Image 1 (cartoon, helix red, strand yellow):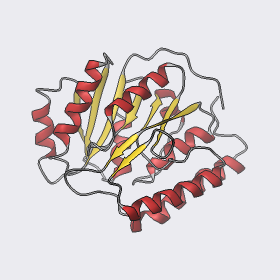
Image 2 (cartoon, rainbow, N blue to C red):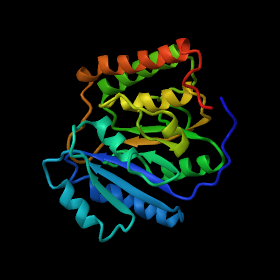
Image 3 (cartoon, rainbow, N blue to C red):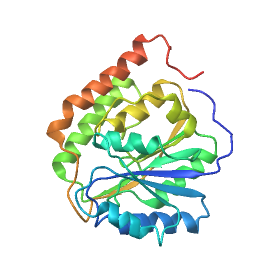
Image 4 (cartoon, helix red, strand yellow):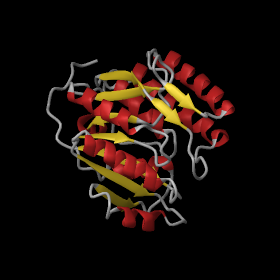
Length: 252
């Protein structure tokens, strides 16, 4: 792991993929904006409408009146969670970014804490819901069991102390995002591709406890039975990079 990056940060970009989230977006975005404004964090909120069939895009246009930092964009190409996040990562302007969910499951105050960690010099700020101080509220039991098993396998396979790799809610300096390209995962497996690449390629990182709340509106987009082989593929790809690439992809 390399030493911390002391370069000052000037703009924090929030990247949010949104597919049929017309009900969730207003409370989610207002909470983020109000929290960041209260903390005097210079920011933009990049929301990617990922082929929604409801009023998601119209709601985003309406919210621009009350959230001046909101930057709605439309992913008109192939859709999917990973593709939407990558689209947002291709369009954010900040020197750091945090990936958050549209359903208000992530606490904006945790995103603020990430910002401070990045400003202390860490290149990645990872949260864990499963360390002392972390919390999950109304997590579906089956998904929780699958989550803990998957994260155990990642932790053992990569020999890392991080126990919540699969959670998308993480923050990165821009140099990390640029250094982990190109991204391959078009679906939820992007949630493990970015942090594992960052770790394997030698960027500095730290972990803090975070909280998670189940969505109040709409339906969860993650379908466990569809994702197992996709997670395995991405993890196997990065595992091969870690142990067999002879450092060819590590940061300069």
